[in-house]
Image (cartoon, rainbow, N blue to C red; front, side, top):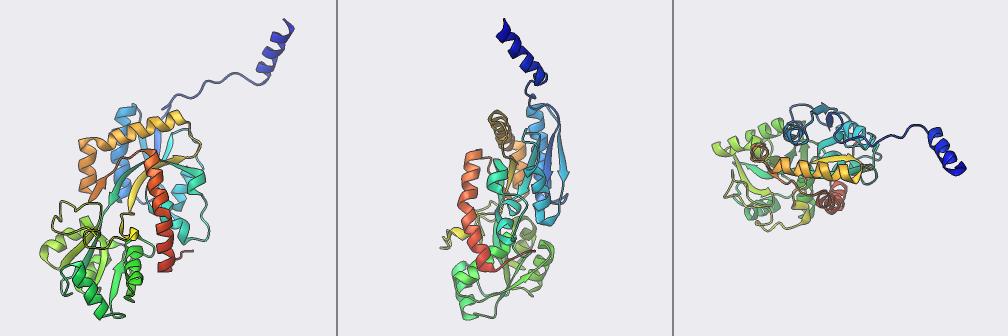
Length: 322
């Protein structure tokens, strides 16, 4: 009897036994490291509604912008890995910023794990209507004839539109000049006004200007032609098959590393089911994106495939932030 008594005493000395917290045991917070009103914010709120119904809990969206998205991303990287704090973000803080800053406060491979990718954005190569090019072949010939004289715009240094345009210029030895803007609205305004010759934009804001003929779309960075532009080829269809011309502007759900596997699988299952609903699919399409909803493993593989490509593009562009 002495040994059992000793074991009981040792157990009591360690404190009362605690059962594992049920999941979900309380509301789930979706941290968005971008401002309210943007695409990541809208996707998080839509996803939270769908997942909340499936999991029987409340989803709270918290916008924590700052430091180009690193602030909110770091909040999740340092959060308790119990599934009650998740990250909904565009690809910039996890895919691009680690190569643009000398130091970031988190390590994507060490501190975060993917749950699923929600959607991928589409970039459209548009030119002002006065540019004498109606397809990529004509555009490249025109740019070569005007080597060193052509400018292009982007919606910010280090954005996907900047990196891919810079790569196009450098890889084809076109010596184009980059003109960055603080956002997409001023970029499109300057494109329409003809003060910028061309640039990559997202689909939604530029469609009205394509319809009026003030701008012309030559190709899209997407896996397939968007339904809004059925006659505009993808970059691959236009002969531009470099890996740098694959979609890299995606939105994803991530969680702190170290989350229990059962919780991770449950979140993955319910997130993918939510993304697959007709309601969520319609919302994603309304944002001018393609729905994904892949497995956590495939999301991680996609990240690992793109990371070295983005690293090369950042080096090529010379884009650095402090």
